[in-house]
Image 1 (spheres, helix red, strand yellow):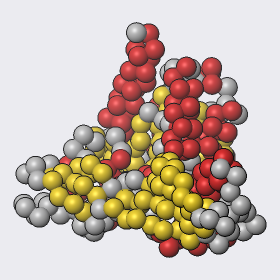
Image 2 (tube, rainbow over the protein chains, first blue to last red):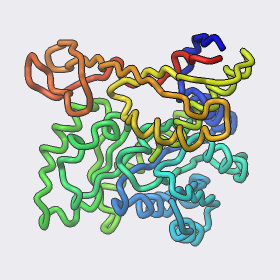
Image 3 (cartoon, one colour):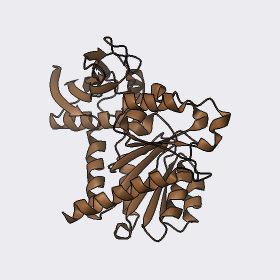
Image 4 (cartoon, rainbow over the protein chains, first blue to last red):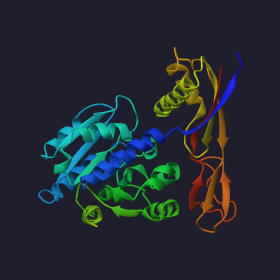
Length: 225
Length: 114
């Protein structure tokens, strides 16, 4: 049989982008700020989420989407704080995608939520490549990981709106050079905010809370105008 | 690892288009991958061989066209082409303060079918 060539020119990532746009539209209809929280395993995503829930208790209605390859451990910790939580087990996949978020949104009472924090799978590579349809992407780098990570995982540090340096209470015990980190960050992503925090001692967290509150306010103002 | 969902998206696009032209078999799939997309062609072919079994695209050869990225230096303004994530230093001023202009494409260009 004759072999023919058919021109297609279709973006392979388009299906995910399309779902991401739908997710964002849904969040906006309900005046919800969505935040994608990324980091390597153990950098402090769950603790940051727990501190944030404590701080905004009675002020913001928070829901959490927990992404892990397996287990409900993080979801249980969040659930004990009395906020709605959806656990996504990716069963091996190294990141969350827009389809998983769509399913999670289907299981939340969106009219009763102001802020959704999405804890992505612990990984500095793949989560940065998948748009979830949320408004803001943030990442946490913890002091023991080292200041050189922006050079090694440039996409993650390029994509985010905020980089939080966590565990600053242990800075005296590590060779983490804050100046080098800030310089690398300024090179890759000058628009990103950098907050130095400790989820253990609560140092520096107020700056993060203020940023988050302002982003929630912006979503509300956008809705009103 | 995440080459698998990408590859599923490729198979969806290909089978959908092949159905449109009533193809009996897909022999070749031409794909453009930007060198700053972070996607490894060999992993995509491997995943494709597994998930395309018992479809009309089984055995299809994936032809990859890897395009260099275009990067702009935010220090001195030079635009240069990049061959990957290990090639982001400005050839003019030697700084790594860059803005990626292109290089993250991932596109099914065409298929050869019969």
